[in-house]
Image (cartoon, rainbow, N blue to C red; front, side, top):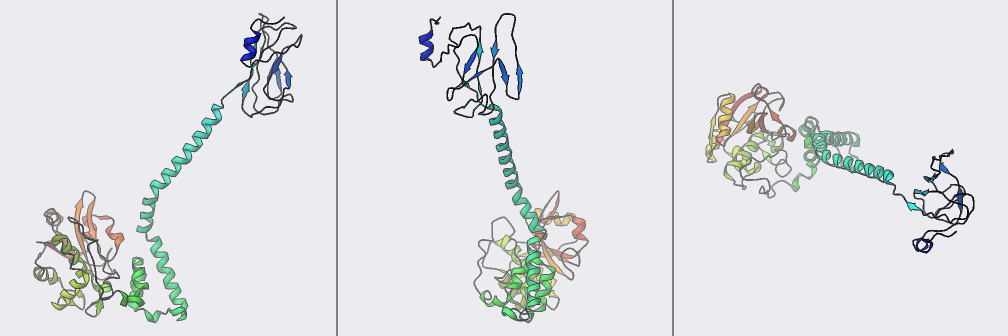
Length: 364
């Protein structure tokens, strides 16, 4: 008995099977057939029949092996056959591919997790790197390596402790940031007396941060010392001068020469009068400031800077000059010409005031 829609079904890709007395299903592949009523892979067989004499046969195929069947693609497929089949009547089946939504979603979630983790790492990397530098991890390692190599060389390879002043080696042991300055001392003539361009350090409205041990001027003389060892006073005055005037022709070398020629260089370092009388010689207004938090904030609010003479503590073991350039609710902003790490954090008034010996407001 042939169904009247046989021709139309053939055009749609349905395959007829005249197998009497049983219900068979046709799968895409090499033409093999499997006989069952309801089979879920997992070695369990279920036979379900409703009172209406209708049978439902379904199979969820998770691999390319089932009853000897061979599939063209390893995709999940479900074959549905419903209704009564009489002996001799063609049974029409068709394979429909099932999208593997579950596995695709899992892959998408894993990919999203990897991308999210990568973004977090990239976002955190700059902060972690700055923290590492603030902790001095890289500089400490470099400084220790240089000092150990120098001690072990005994003149071999052109390295010897005699080639470096002991003051420089002591500086490196105390301040790992000076590693390049100390290690380049044998090549100091490549920097001494050479032209200095501070145009890249100056930005209108901002106080530049300059290091006294910068190789461009750190090897130059400040009396009997080097600017890199004793030039914190001239370096602070240079930062104030650049901020207030914008004149980049003045640098720590020329400022140290001015201080020395005017008699402000002493055996202890730089005379305190350099920040009053010496400031006037630079057409700046410098005056001693009574120690109080209100006086410091008032000077900074007027666009001036405050230079401080510091005693032993967080900034020095003997004496040192630093510059205060601003403040907010978290504390004061410091420009320390000897250590960048001190300049990258804020300081509360109590910590600073306990180490201050004298301070001056510098304006125009």
